[in-house]
Amino acid sequence: MISYTLTPIQQIEDAVFRRAGVRVLIKREDRNHPYISGNKWWKLKYNLERALSEKHTTLLTFGGAYSNHLYAVAAAASELGMKSIGVVRGEETLPLNATLSFAKRMGMELHYVSRDRYRDKTTEHFKKELRGDFGRFYLIPEGGTNAEAVRGCVEFGQTLVKEAEFDVLCLPVATGGTMAGLVQVLMPRQRVIGFSVLRNGDFLEQEVRRWLPTPSAASWRIETRFDFGGFARATPELIHFIEAQRENNNLVLDPVYTSKTLMGIRSLVESGEFTASTTILMLHTGGLHGGVIQTNLKEPPTAC
Image (cartoon, rainbow, N blue to C red):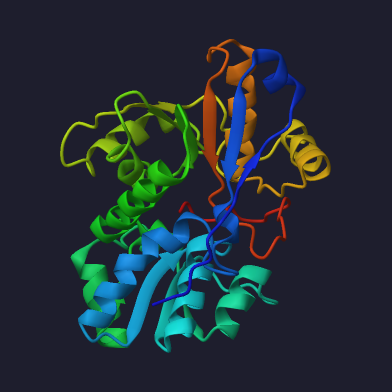
């Protein structure tokens, strides 16, 4: 299977946290693999295992031109000696951006479809067309969330419970798969706050619930006040916050997911949401593309 590197937990230094007596830690899953980083590694783990057990030689998945998911699937297929096909939303634009250039270098065949056709990606008719074009493949949905992905995130949650003592777990949410896995294994005394990176993200609560086999012991909620204008949107305030974290904590955050979560945590701490002595653990879900932050996107990356 694909390699995995054990990752550290880092304490975030901030005057707001010190004044409130709240300890904020960050699990540096951005360091778990050079290319298949963060929650992508856990979401792909059992998908790849199943693909290999079923004797597939090709992976096919979907994403936009800046998709972290396409990037990770291309790298995973290359590491396993498999072929990969990326169904890309929209027209080909040359020269290719860094994300698609990397995917192509990893051997991914890029197949562009119109935005109208892309909306049909979950239909059986569209899948049948793809099988006619490419033959047999293992299909991983856009963003990677399916039963195998949730299983991987359950396992990730089990490692977190053993590794760290914390009261609140915080993470960015775009499809709900990672959060659904994590809330299944936490204790009743613990709670989970997912920070929607999507505008009007209230629907994500239902997305999480549909992957939960039973009600979770831990309490959880989706926080929708910190999307900063919507998916892949970044305000000057958010960009300044990213720069400050790099300088003050030697911490690189992306403008789509992790920066919004940490800034949301800071706002909640400042508003008195957490009592003194609370320990918050935040997940760094990767998405840095080797540490390169893309803040001027012509097209939003795909949720993952």
